[in-house]
Length: 605
Image (cartoon, rainbow, N blue to C red; front, side, top):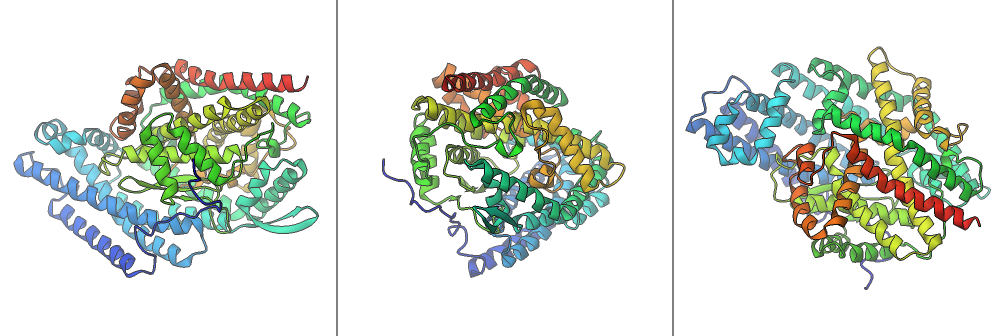
């Protein structure tokens, strides 16, 4: 097929939303959204939403409910699109002061929406739910949201306290998050390469971990650690500030712990989490077999931290961006024309920002913009792993496509289920790559996949243990940089074990991972493991009965905000509260490890 995109790494295009931050259209749109929030506040006041016990649900009460929900959904959707548009500038250039200023202005308006959300939750929690469902089709369409609001209402502080908490978040966790993002995205790191010292942005330095030359990987690792050490004090302050706020609010809202609040927000229970984590611990020995085999390929006794992403094997394919795009579009077509058309549109309409550059945040993400549109941020690497990341993020976009018919209150998808489509799409690409590869290329493809899976199972377990320990210790006092380093190293030793050289771990991973700094959210880690293993489990079901699976899969994606994880899994006869399902998903990875180790052994003959 012809090339889908030009050879140059693209920047995303959001000109269809607004022509630019300085355009009259953007200014008018921003002001209109403020006016809409004003009108929504007035409606809440008129209907006395959350201000007093609701009156009996007569016809007028049902009409009031439907009016409030309809208007609330509409305003949330417009604010979300504006937020995504501004974020597109901030995420790709944190030095853009105009975008930062607009972002700050919008955050002040979002505080007002957060206060309305608290009032709305309290109002819903006090309504006669059964009577409302019986009388209102709109309520029945939002039944899961209503039940969640009822449960959440039991954990609300008093209305004045919740209003104050929403205001203080701007100078609390939101401010700490902004500090973290600005410091890390603007960090220029001196690194010695090829006999010369160059200053590179942190994402470029971290990308050196993918270099084939071990000396360059080590130089990048050493420069990275030195840079994190120099920036550690403000980053530690950000982490202490965020965790202190989360601990305080969780206690005041009568959650047993920040983890309990996180599990509720993730639509799973403690039994499910423990079943998954126990299966993960059982798999550590398999992952260490993989790490030992990779060490043999690299000719070293033990992998150092900077070897985790070292390329191995020999790929006969050059995965430049345009080639990756063509491959993804073609292989998505083997699943369904709808998935293929979606991917082709994303590349054609420039939904992807792929070029690493100063000021741009590290990593990759997909953000929903409006209707069926998403945008994808990547820092593309010309390797199979870079293509795999694109497929993963396009999976998020496909999920958003299926949610397009949902209202804002219906589409709230927890992190546990947000990875479902991304893992599925990533697996399609991995299987396609393996099907047409010789032994050396299979090693390269399997290793890229296993490196990612090791991150999601082993490293996520590490991050979870670190975060548990940090939250517990933070209840007593702030933690120093040295203490945070010690907690991280301890968690790495517990999870990686003898799979890594203990002399070359990464004590500053608490600074490198932005997941710890996502505003007031806590435990932004285990949902990735859930997503990987749930996605792999679904892919296994697809292989067993493709026709039946396709008929239900898009409906599942469209329903991730309409039921909890256990109920959605039950549609595919999956019980997520027992270790057996998670063991079965991990067995898919174990088979890849077995295949990888066998190929390594064969290559050594």
